[in-house]
Length: 164
Image (cartoon, rainbow, N blue to C red; front, top):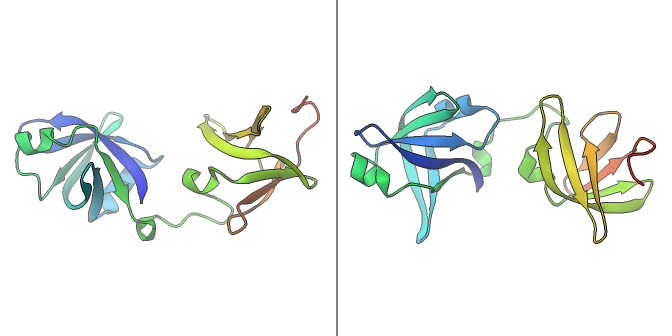
Protein backbone atom coordinates (compact mmCIF):
# COMPACT_ATOMS: atom_id res chain seq x y z
CA UNK A 1 0.00 0.00 0.00
CA UNK A 2 1.26 3.45 -0.95
CA UNK A 3 0.16 6.55 0.94
CA UNK A 4 -1.29 9.19 -1.39
CA UNK A 5 -3.06 11.45 1.10
CA UNK A 6 -4.07 12.15 4.67
CA UNK A 7 -7.54 13.20 5.74
CA UNK A 8 -7.31 16.53 7.53
CA UNK A 9 -10.92 17.31 8.40
CA UNK A 10 -14.47 17.32 7.20
CA UNK A 11 -15.54 19.80 4.55
CA UNK A 12 -19.09 21.10 4.68
CA UNK A 13 -21.94 19.03 6.10
CA UNK A 14 -22.45 16.38 3.39
CA UNK A 15 -19.70 13.95 4.38
CA UNK A 16 -16.95 15.46 2.24
CA UNK A 17 -13.36 15.23 3.44
CA UNK A 18 -10.49 17.66 3.13
CA UNK A 19 -7.37 15.69 2.15
CA UNK A 20 -3.73 16.74 2.19
CA UNK A 21 -2.23 15.10 -0.93
CA UNK A 22 1.00 13.13 -0.46
CA UNK A 23 1.57 13.07 -4.21
CA UNK A 24 3.03 15.68 -6.51
CA UNK A 25 -0.03 15.33 -8.78
CA UNK A 26 -3.26 15.92 -6.84
CA UNK A 27 -5.17 15.46 -10.12
CA UNK A 28 -4.45 11.72 -9.84
CA UNK A 29 -7.32 11.39 -7.34
CA UNK A 30 -9.73 12.07 -10.21
CA UNK A 31 -8.54 8.90 -11.96
CA UNK A 32 -9.08 6.63 -8.94
CA UNK A 33 -12.28 4.63 -8.47
CA UNK A 34 -11.38 3.41 -4.98
CA UNK A 35 -8.74 3.79 -2.27
CA UNK A 36 -7.98 2.19 1.08
CA UNK A 37 -8.18 3.89 4.45
CA UNK A 38 -5.59 2.69 6.95
CA UNK A 39 -7.71 2.29 10.07
CA UNK A 40 -6.49 1.12 13.51
CA UNK A 41 -8.53 -2.10 13.22
CA UNK A 42 -7.68 -2.83 9.57
CA UNK A 43 -7.74 -1.35 6.07
CA UNK A 44 -11.09 -0.39 4.55
CA UNK A 45 -11.76 -0.15 0.81
CA UNK A 46 -13.63 3.08 -0.01
CA UNK A 47 -15.24 4.01 -3.32
CA UNK A 48 -14.72 7.60 -4.49
CA UNK A 49 -17.88 9.40 -5.52
CA UNK A 50 -16.47 12.88 -6.12
CA UNK A 51 -13.15 14.73 -6.25
CA UNK A 52 -12.30 18.39 -6.56
CA UNK A 53 -9.31 20.54 -5.79
CA UNK A 54 -9.51 23.25 -3.16
CA UNK A 55 -6.45 25.47 -2.72
CA UNK A 56 -3.59 23.06 -1.82
CA UNK A 57 -5.92 20.25 -0.80
CA UNK A 58 -8.31 17.75 -2.38
CA UNK A 59 -11.96 17.48 -1.40
CA UNK A 60 -13.11 13.84 -1.57
CA UNK A 61 -16.37 12.13 -0.93
CA UNK A 62 -16.84 8.40 -0.54
CA UNK A 63 -19.97 6.40 -1.27
CA UNK A 64 -19.58 4.80 2.16
CA UNK A 65 -19.53 8.15 4.02
CA UNK A 66 -23.02 9.68 3.86
CA UNK A 67 -22.76 12.53 6.37
CA UNK A 68 -20.53 14.80 8.41
CA UNK A 69 -20.64 12.66 11.57
CA UNK A 70 -19.36 9.62 9.61
CA UNK A 71 -16.69 11.80 7.99
CA UNK A 72 -15.56 13.20 11.34
CA UNK A 73 -14.40 9.72 12.45
CA UNK A 74 -11.86 9.67 9.58
CA UNK A 75 -9.79 12.68 10.66
CA UNK A 76 -5.99 12.08 10.33
CA UNK A 77 -6.48 8.73 8.55
CA UNK A 78 -4.11 7.91 5.68
CA UNK A 79 -5.45 7.21 2.20
CA UNK A 80 -3.54 4.51 0.32
CA UNK A 81 -3.59 2.79 -3.04
CA UNK A 82 -2.29 -0.53 -4.24
CA UNK A 83 0.88 -0.65 -6.30
CA UNK A 84 -1.18 -1.67 -9.36
CA UNK A 85 -3.00 1.69 -9.14
CA UNK A 86 0.19 3.71 -9.55
CA UNK A 87 0.53 5.84 -12.65
CA UNK A 88 3.22 4.83 -15.13
CA UNK A 89 6.33 6.97 -14.85
CA UNK A 90 8.70 7.77 -17.69
CA UNK A 91 11.88 5.72 -17.91
CA UNK A 92 14.45 6.59 -15.22
CA UNK A 93 11.83 8.24 -13.01
CA UNK A 94 10.92 6.75 -9.64
CA UNK A 95 8.45 7.15 -6.82
CA UNK A 96 9.91 8.34 -3.52
CA UNK A 97 8.85 5.13 -1.76
CA UNK A 98 10.99 3.19 -4.27
CA UNK A 99 14.07 5.30 -3.49
CA UNK A 100 13.91 5.29 0.32
CA UNK A 101 16.24 2.62 1.75
CA UNK A 102 18.33 2.16 -1.40
CA UNK A 103 22.09 1.75 -0.84
CA UNK A 104 24.25 4.39 -2.54
CA UNK A 105 27.67 3.61 -4.03
CA UNK A 106 30.41 5.65 -5.65
CA UNK A 107 33.12 3.68 -7.46
CA UNK A 108 32.18 0.58 -5.46
CA UNK A 109 32.38 2.38 -2.11
CA UNK A 110 29.27 2.29 0.08
CA UNK A 111 28.18 5.83 1.01
CA UNK A 112 25.04 5.01 2.98
CA UNK A 113 21.32 4.47 2.48
CA UNK A 114 18.76 6.99 1.29
CA UNK A 115 16.80 8.01 4.37
CA UNK A 116 14.69 10.79 2.88
CA UNK A 117 14.03 12.74 -0.30
CA UNK A 118 13.81 16.52 -0.10
CA UNK A 119 11.71 18.00 -2.87
CA UNK A 120 13.01 21.38 -3.93
CA UNK A 121 11.76 23.56 -6.75
CA UNK A 122 14.41 22.53 -9.24
CA UNK A 123 15.44 18.97 -8.34
CA UNK A 124 15.06 16.43 -5.56
CA UNK A 125 17.85 15.95 -3.04
CA UNK A 126 18.61 12.52 -1.57
CA UNK A 127 19.48 12.42 2.15
CA UNK A 128 22.04 9.62 2.41
CA UNK A 129 23.17 8.42 5.84
CA UNK A 130 25.60 5.85 7.12
CA UNK A 131 26.52 5.31 10.78
CA UNK A 132 28.75 8.38 10.92
CA UNK A 133 27.70 11.04 8.43
CA UNK A 134 24.95 12.46 6.28
CA UNK A 135 25.38 13.43 2.63
CA UNK A 136 22.94 15.48 0.58
CA UNK A 137 23.06 14.33 -3.04
CA UNK A 138 21.27 16.29 -5.76
CA UNK A 139 19.13 14.04 -7.97
CA UNK A 140 20.73 15.12 -11.23
CA UNK A 141 21.50 12.97 -14.28
CA UNK A 142 25.12 14.15 -14.10
CA UNK A 143 25.43 12.74 -10.57
CA UNK A 144 23.08 9.72 -10.46
CA UNK A 145 24.58 7.25 -12.91
CA UNK A 146 22.01 4.53 -12.41
CA UNK A 147 19.47 2.90 -10.13
CA UNK A 148 18.88 -0.82 -9.81
CA UNK A 149 15.54 -1.25 -8.00
CA UNK A 150 15.85 -5.04 -7.93
CA UNK A 151 19.21 -4.88 -6.13
CA UNK A 152 18.16 -1.72 -4.20
CA UNK A 153 21.31 0.14 -5.25
CA UNK A 154 22.09 3.56 -6.66
CA UNK A 155 25.36 4.43 -8.36
CA UNK A 156 26.61 8.01 -8.25
CA UNK A 157 29.53 10.16 -9.31
CA UNK A 158 29.82 12.96 -6.80
CA UNK A 159 31.30 16.34 -7.71
CA UNK A 160 34.48 17.33 -5.87
CA UNK A 161 33.85 18.97 -2.53
CA UNK A 162 30.39 17.44 -1.95
CA UNK A 163 31.81 15.06 0.67
CA UNK A 164 34.51 16.14 3.12
